[in-house]
Image 1 (tube, one colour):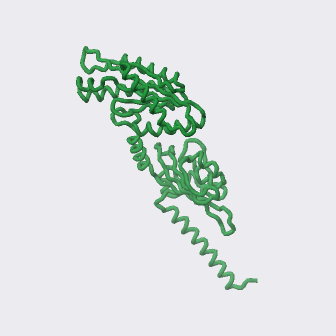
Image 2: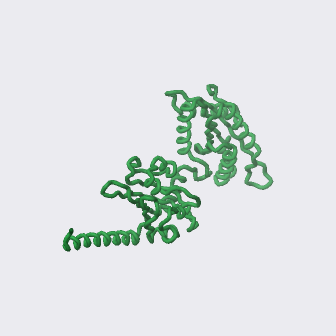
Image 3: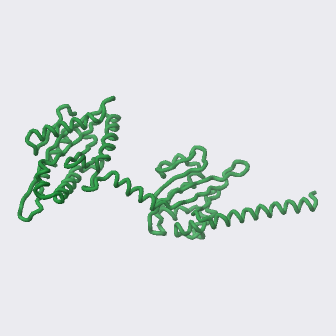
Amino acid sequence: MADKGQETGMGDAGAAAASDHRFAVNLMQHLAVPAFVLDAEGRVIIWNKACERLSGVPADEVLGTREQWRAFYPAPRPCLADLVLEGRTDDIAALYPVHKGNTDSNRDVHAENWCLMPRMGSELYLAIDVGPIYDEAGRLVAVVETLRDMTEYKRARMALEYMAAVDSLTGIANRRSFDEKVANEWRRARRDGMPLALVMIDVDHFKHYNDLYGHVEGDECLRRLASLLDRAARRPGDLVCRYGGEEFAIVLPSTSLGGATAVANRIQHKVGQLDLSPRPNEDRRVTVSLGVAALIPEAGVPVENLVAAADEALYQAKHAGRNCVVQAPSSA
C-alpha cells in the first residue's frame, strides 16, 4: 500500500500534467497563426481564434466533428491533416499539386492550395503545414495543421509569370512562351510518335503600312491580327504567339502537314477580309505570307529542325510574291 507521501507525489504529477495540457491548449488558442488539431479519430479538438478569423467559422461549429473541410471547400474533401492522419499520403499529390515533405513516413508535410473559403465568400491561396504528434509508445495521437494566407504573394507571382509569358502589345503569347511550348510539344510528340506542326506568319509590307499610317496605327494593326490568329487556333493545346516584330507563329500539336496547311489557308483568307484602314471611307487591306512545316520527331533530331523548316517555307512564300501559303518539302 502506498504511503501518504507517494500518493501526494502522484497527485502532484497528475496536477502538473493537467496544468501543462491547459497551458498548451491556451497557447494554441492564442497563436497568431491559424491552426487546428485533430485527435486520433479525426475529430477537431482545437480550432484556434486565428483560424476562426481566417475561415469565418467559429470553433463551436467544428469542435468534436470531422467537418473541418466546411471552412475551406464547398463539398466534402479531405484536408491535408486528414490525409496524414489516415496514412493516405499517396493521395496528397492529387489534391495538392504543390507539396513537399517526407510523405512516406507520415512526418511533417507542407502543401499549398487554393481554398474557396465558403463562409468568407472569397478564394484564398493557403500554405499548409501538418505535423503528426506521437505518444511515447509511437502511436499517432493527434495531427496539427497550421495555415498561412499567401494570396497576395501568389497573385503577384501569377501576374509576374503572366507578364513574362505574354506579349505586352498584342496580349498573346511571346517568344519565350513559344520557345517553351515548342520544346515541350517536341518531346511529347517524340514520345507519342505524333507529328508536330508549325505555321510561321509574316505581315506583308508592314513597314509601308507603318510609314503610311504611323506607328500607333501599326500597333493597332498587329493587335487586330493577333486577335484574328488567336481565334483561328481553335484547340486548347494550340499556341499562337508573336514571334517578333510583325512575325507570328502557331504551334499545332498532333497535327499533320495537311491539317496545318488548312489552318494556314483559313488564316490567309480571314486576313484578306479584314479592313485595317484607320481612315473613314478608305478600305485598307493587309496580306500575310505563311510557311508551314510538320515533323514526326526522331531520336537525336532537335526541335530547331522544325523551326528552320517552317522559316524556310515562309522565306519561299515571301519570295514567291507574298500573300500565299508554302509547305516545307520535307514535312510529314
